[in-house]
Image (tube, rainbow over all chains, first blue to last red):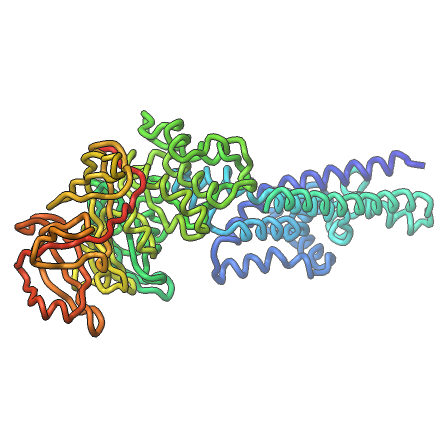
Amino acid sequence: MFDATMMQAVILTLKLAGATTVLLLLVGTPLAWWLSRGRGILRDVAATLVSLPIVLPPTVLGFYLLLAMGPQSPLTALLGRSLAFSFEGLLLGSVIYSLPFVVNPIRNAFEAMGSRPMEVAATLRAHPLDAFVTVALPLASPGILTGAILGFAHTVGEFGVVLMIGGAIPGKTKVISITIFDYVETLDWARAHILAGGMLAFSFAVILAMTLIERRLSGARP
Amino acid sequence: MIEARFSGRLGQFALDAAFRVPGKGITALFGPSGCGKTSVLRCVAGLSRLPGDLVVNGESWQSGRRFRPVHRRPLAYVFQEASLFPHLSVAGNLGYGRRRSRAGAERIAFDEVVGLLGIAPLLDRPVPRLSGGERQRVAIGRALLSQPELLLMDEPLSALDRISKDEILPYLERLHAGLSIPVLYVSHDMAEVERLADTLVLMEAGQVRAAGPLGEMLSDPALPLLHRPEPGAVLDGTIRCYGPHYGLSEVDIPGGRMLVPGELGPNGGRARLRIAARDVSLGRLPPDDTSILNALPARIIGGTPAGDNQMTVRLALGEAGEGTVILSRISRLSWDRLQLTPGETVITRIKAVALVDPLTLPR
């Protein structure tokens, strides 16, 4: 039953989620740090923009992304080609769509840390970047782990944005959620069951793992 | 020499503080809670920035628009709460500043600090499994190992209970004796200050009220310290010898010699003594028939009323008043009856002398 089409969808989904998570950690960690240090209207606006995908319908986000990837858009002009219906376009969409799920836990972890550890590091001659790597990152590691898991899981479960900007090109943009939708539409319920069940098990495992990790980490540190 | 001047607002709080203190020994920043002691310390560290100037032993750390960032100042800071890094072991915490110090040769050796603070048994322990006192000792060790040229301590004992305090104070005293780094020590506890400080910076409502040697500050009638309910004088003396037969030590103090109960330490060592004003009575005749051990001549500097019916008398020890200033609290009736006048030499009878510092400080 588990055929090449399904396999292709699973591999593509994992590739997309993995790449999205890596990008999100690279972009999201410094962004979370900046948001966690201090207040100001600029930061409030930025934090709101970051959190927007939580409430925005994916179709709305997808619609604007599609426009941004259109033939007349500055992005297309800059890249020399349109990102619509490509893996890279999907990656860009996923990064924006999952941004709050990565940034917010990391930001909370940085805020919970307070300013003292960084002050201590500075009085011990640590350059700010040095202190960030050797003190802030390790102290925020539970938040970073939570953010990575949430970002990955959320990207795996993405549907609306993919549909809007990616379509269903096998091997390029046809991820698991779209494949399930296809199976259901063509009344191939047996195959839909396999993928849907797999997603159910995956989601359960993710939430359970996070709960256990959080308990472990909070148990180790007062 | 440490010269500091900071002036500006930190949130709601207005600070306008300037002082100049010696670049060695322990200087206490003393004052009631909320007077700006910690703000001054943070400004010296560079953790807070206010307009001002700061010169530490000839090096300018802040001047006009120039502001040396915290990590480039050769200082160490011991916070009120130990603030150890929870993700590192005790050894990791101790090594953090040590690895980053610019000093080529280690002036403060690892073994020395570990021995001084008694933290050898803790080295492999994770931070969450340390007691409050142990944490603060590790924090002090971590600070010292960063090879500071100035040590800043912000009420390092105030978060601790009595037992942990008593556990750490001797280490601080040893530190004072064994290391030559200047220390700025924030405290609101006069007992701590009398025990540790050489110099006192008295703060009030964001300003420096006065600064100077501890002994002078304690006996200055213009300052509130003299008007405390239990004023006293602190004297640094040199141990001459110990007589085991009576269990008394002879201690030389500026302007006299005293007998102090107990074996205080090796001959030639230093001992800090405290004489409470109410333990000193005054008279004109030499006491030849008394149980009091210490009767020293002293010259009266002046008297200040203390409450309605008492006087606090300031006296300089010695026939000619050449020694340390001590205080005597007598009734106003005695002051009038004896017609004591400034400039006159009297005999002080000192009922009790307390050793402030149980550890003697080798010179």
